[in-house]
Length: 125
Image (cartoon, rainbow, N blue to C red; front, side, top):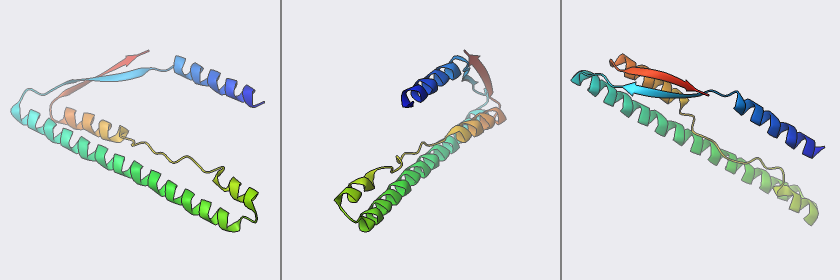
């Protein structure tokens, strides 16, 4: 039964990818000096936003690891024998978090256009 679900999920994933449209952006910078300085400020803000997102993701993963350690220690304290203690590490969630910089990129594109630049959206299948 587990094999069936694995195959089903794999087929579903492939079907979803087949219908995906990939988007890329082409940037045309403004021509004025003031516009170029404005775009540089936009880039600095995007970098700060991305760094904040990275920091948030690291903190989220660290907090998960701390919860796992605490839950593991509590399980060991409650274990009545070695077999129960061996099972304490099972079922712990994986601790990882990705920095979601989507909003940072969206803001950058908006800022870029506000500075007099142009952003072309190119969709590819």
